[in-house]
Image 1 (spheres, rainbow, N blue to C red):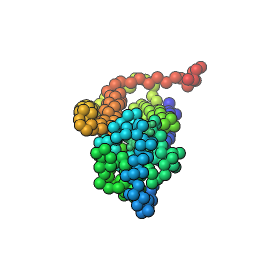
Image 2 (cartoon, rainbow, N blue to C red; image 1 turned 60 degrees about the vertical axis):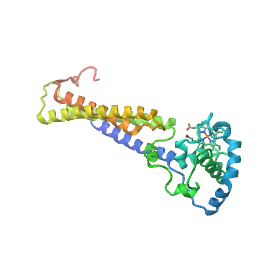
Image 3 (cartoon, helix red, strand yellow; image 1 turned 90 degrees about the horizontal axis):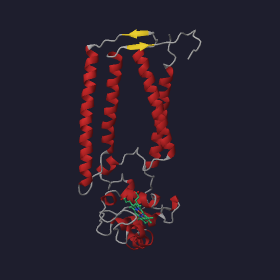
Image 4 (cartoon, helix red, strand yellow; image 1 turned 90 degrees about the vertical axis):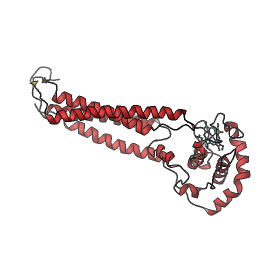
Length: 290
Ligand code: HEC
């Protein structure tokens, strides 16, 4: 009997791929740095203003949450905080756009500070209470490829991971997962059972090739499990280090995903080559066609 479910899985996977690309664009828009224009006049103003204006702005707008000497409160500690001193772009972006409960301060984000004031207070934060920045932070220095961001920070702060995941993205991701699952199951059953369903008992036998693939996949499962556990232990150790190191979420996720994928592969191979199957097909002229 001809199968009619061979096309839909492929369509589902193609649709899922399109949605995934769409998602990457959504994420990317959320996290890509805003384009900036180098403006020497602005640089001069920031240079002149930060020690005094920056302090005034900080005391009026920020000290309530971050403490008068950056010691922290509702908001995180800013003095000696490596997340702050190591990532100038983060400081400016946070002040411009805020992040609940911190309000946005940039004019273009509904706040009350003009660009020169945002940079004044950013430089004040980066040069107070023991913080010391070698360079003045201006739109130009940020544009220069965020030269002051340590490579470690850039590596951890993936371009494709949004700061916060919002509802449409969750919806899209769920849908992509569903479509992919449906598509992969469909393609698998097509591969495992053939293009035509033949009713009856199917005896299977394995070949040396299949045996090798099985053993390689199982070895892969063991390998990635070990890597995963090692990575988690390393992450836990990093939490207790001074200063704390962020866990490498990407590596952890990759190892975990590989374990699951290889396990699925093992199951798939087992079902096709090691397990006898039975195909039951309803008589097409039967009273209940389903
Ligand atoms: C209503 C309280 C509040 C006010 C007012 C506020 N902040 Fe924040 N700020 C926070 C909180 C909470 C965070 C942490 C946000 C997060 O990452 O979830 C934060 C994060 C930051 C960060 C990033 C620090 C880090 O470790 O991630 C910087 C820099 C910062 N604020 C600077 C400022 C400056 C400068 C001002 C004034 C212009 C200001 N904040 C005003 C609450 C506040």
